[in-house]
Image 1 (cartoon, rainbow, N blue to C red):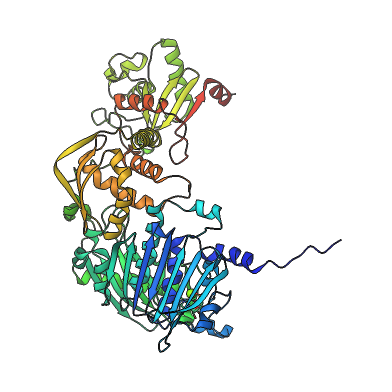
Image 2: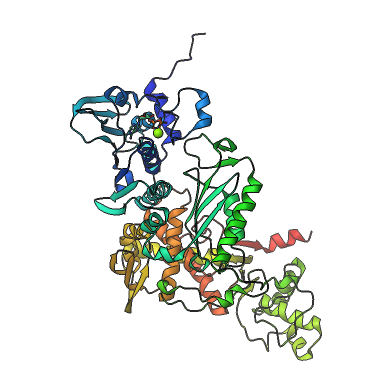
Length: 626
Ligand code: ADP
Ligand code: MG
C-alpha cells in the first residue's frame, strides 16, 4: 500500500491551531492587549470597527520589536517569554505559548508597525493568511501598532458563526474591562466605530472602577482588605442595596489575571447572606495575590479557570473578610436573625424609574403537599385537591363530564370534591354532581398555578403557561419588529434611566430594533437613556425589567448563532414579559392565552425550543388503566 501520511503545510496547521486561540473578535482583543502589557506599555489604545469583525487595532507604547523579531513573532511557538520548561513555573508574563500572533495571522489580514526604543526607523509588515506580503522600513512612534482586519476572511464558516455586532461587542468590551481592571496603572482607551467608549487615565483601583462603571459607582463601593500568609485580598464589593437582579459586575483577579470561579463566587455570596434582595447578585471587584507555586493556571490560552492548592482555606478567608468589611461599614444587620431583610431596606431604585409594587408569589408553595384541607373560607380561588394529579381523579372528571353532557371543568370537579371530603359544609358538598353554584364557567383549568388544562376533542391538552405566553409574545414582537407597524404610547414625562457606558453602547446597537417594537428614544448620552415612548404592549414600570433582561440575554446569548439581533430582541422581550409560573390566571386570561397560542405560527414550541403543551388522548388514558 502506498504511504498516505503527510505533514500538514504550515498555513493549514496554523489555521487549525487558530481555532483554539481565536474564537471571536474578543479573543484577538485579549491576546493583543496582553502582548502590549507584557511589552511594558504605559498607555494602550484599542480601536474596533463593527464589533471587531472589520478591524481590531491595538496601539501601545511598549518596548517594540526589532525587524527580525517582528518577522519572527508570527512564527508558531515563537516567544520571547520563556526559554525552558522550568520557566513555566515562574511566570510573570501573560503570554508564553508563542501562538497568538501566528494564529491570528492565519485567519486575518494583519498589519504590524513597530519600533523599539533607540531605533531610528521601525518595521512595517503585512500578512494575509500566514503569508508575508509586505515588509519594509517605516516611520512609526516607539512601540507597536497591530491591526487585525477582516477576521476569518478565509474561513467563511467561522465568520458566519459570529454573533450579532451587539453580542460580539459585548464580548470585546468584557475583555477590555477585565484587562483594564487588572492594570489601573496603565492608561487605556477604547473606540468603537469612531466613537469613544472608554478613556481611562492611570490611577488607583477605585478610580479605575469608577472610570469604567460611571461616577455613581463611587458611593457604592465598600473596600475589602486582608493579608495572611497564604493570601492577600484587595478590592471592593458593591453595597448590597445596589446589587442587580439579572446581572452584576463580578470580577476576580488572581495575580492580576482575570479568572472565573464558581467556588469563590459562592464564598462572596455567602458573605452577603441575608443582605441581598431576593435573587439579586452580589457585585464585586476582588484581587487575590497568592504564591504562583500554589496555583495551577490552566495553560489553555482561552480558559479562565484556575486551581488552588488550598481551596477551602481560601473560601473561608474570602468569606470572613468580606463579611467583616460589610459589617464595618455597618451594612450587616446586627444580631437579628429573624428579620425579613426585604422589609427594612428601602432599596434605592431611584435611577430605575417608578416600579409598581408586585404581588409576592410563593413559588415553593405546593398545594398538593398540604395534608389538612383548608377551611372553606380560607380557600384560595384556585385551590386544588391534593391528589388531582392522580389519574383516577382526572378520569372521574372526564366521565362525569361525559355523563352530565355539559362543560363541567376539572376545576369544579376537583374543588367541590375537596369540599365534600372535608365535610365542613353541606352546602359546599351539594354541587359535586352539578355545575350550579360554581362561579367559574370556564372550559380551562389552572393546575399548580403553572399549567393550563383544557379539554380537546381527542382528550386533554396541558399547556405550560409561561412557555406558551412566550411563544405568543415572541411572534407578536417579531411581527412588529419586521413589519415595523408597531404602535407606541407616548409618555407624558420621559423616562430617564441610568446605564453604564457599556450598556448604553449595546442599547445603541439595538436601537433600531427596539424602535420597531414601539420604543421612542430621546437623548442617549453620558450614562443617561431617555425614553419618550414605549410599546403599547408593556407598561412603563416594565421598561427597566425588559431592558435589563435584554442586556443580560446579550451577555449570555445561547448558542443559536445565525439568528439575528431581531430574534434575540423578540425572544428577550417575550421572556421578560411572559406570565411566570406561580401566577394565578383568571378564566378569561386562560382562554385568551389558549386561543392566542393556537393562533401562532408555531404553537407547539417556545422561542427557546421547549414544548409549550402536551396532549393526552382518551386512548392514552385507556392504556393507563389496562
Ligand atoms: P506570546 O505572547 O505567548 O509570547 P505571541 O504570539 O502573542 O506569543 O507573541 C509572540 C512574541 O511577539 C512575544 O513573545 C513578543 O516577544 C512579541 N510581541 C508580540 N506583541 C508585542 C508587542 N505589542 N510589543 C512587543 N513585542 C511583542
Ligand atoms: Mg501573547
